[in-house]
Length: 246
Ligand SMILES: [Zn+2]
Image (tube, rainbow, N blue to C red; front, top):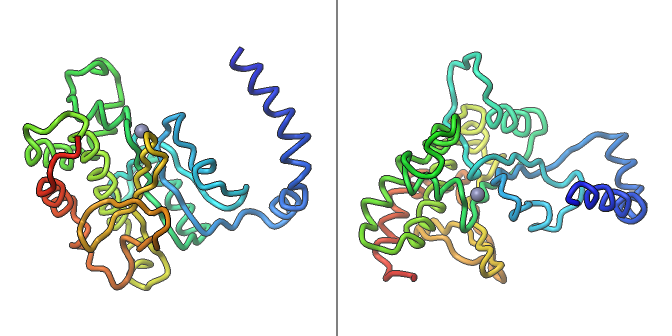
């Protein structure tokens, strides 16, 4: 039974990990959390940021939603329930994180639904299409520019272009744009390929996502990087210029 497995897992955690890290938990309980990194990741059960990065409790503040998306800022704020924006605000303004990582991934169901359009298998869902339409522009751009390429390649490009779109949306929050301009906050665009177990980061120099294992990870957005260099348009043009990957 799935739930029994959870309880067995907790028993193992309590006797193992918790005991081994008792000092850490006591410190976190006493002093509170002070993570330096915010990760916006997908709710997909296969891409747990804490496991992928082998971090410890207290290391990363995590927001998970469908397709790892950041909506544009609503300003002035209204009375709707902006869950992702509220979590980002707390991490940036309350906790003062120094890095924000947008972590997309391969075979993303949310992006797949967006690629297939509103008439797909989720057509009667109440919320999904509206949420994923955050990346509608990126999707339309990729579909137009990569016309004729295999669906897998188009979906991958939309997954990555959506990450860049979320980076741009992050910059619409004034308290993020101000800190990036001040050099106290750095934004990163990452994409995890679960087929290969490889992490890719966006490289502003060639506008493509590249494997990071064994190489220095350059931040996507920091004070010295022109924001125009991370546009989804430039990325899609770079992908379109490459020979098909599949
Ligand atoms: Zn996903």
